[in-house]
Image 1 (cartoon, rainbow, N blue to C red):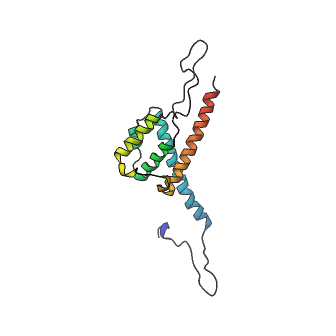
Image 2: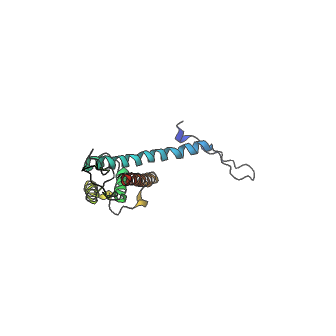
Image 3: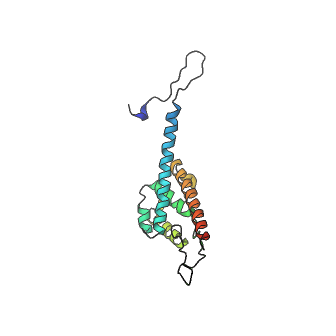
Length: 169
């Protein structure tokens, strides 16, 4: 019998006893952790795709096309809308001069407003019915968890990168 069809609970209605459920708690914890791990993997896939696009390793067309399911695209669309535009302000010249060696601006998180708009336009043009009046509550729990994780992780990475960039002089 496949695991999905195994008996999870046994109910006993003998006498005046209330129904009693017998369930192995470790099985429940294992089943709940699996979707969390998978949603974390999906969150990292979204983050790494955006970073690769910002670094010029792929175009925004390739980034969008690396996600195939409708729910994945909806989640990516919401994620792109939530990202900060140009979160690291250039403070130092990138080219060296005199004794100053120059400080390169980290490009991994340098998402411009124009690029975000281009991505949204491309996604709407490709599957316009998916993105009409899309809200967070429209996402399934798995994708909502991935979205929240991705936004939190991305913003933490931006903060650390910004602090590292600003500490270089």
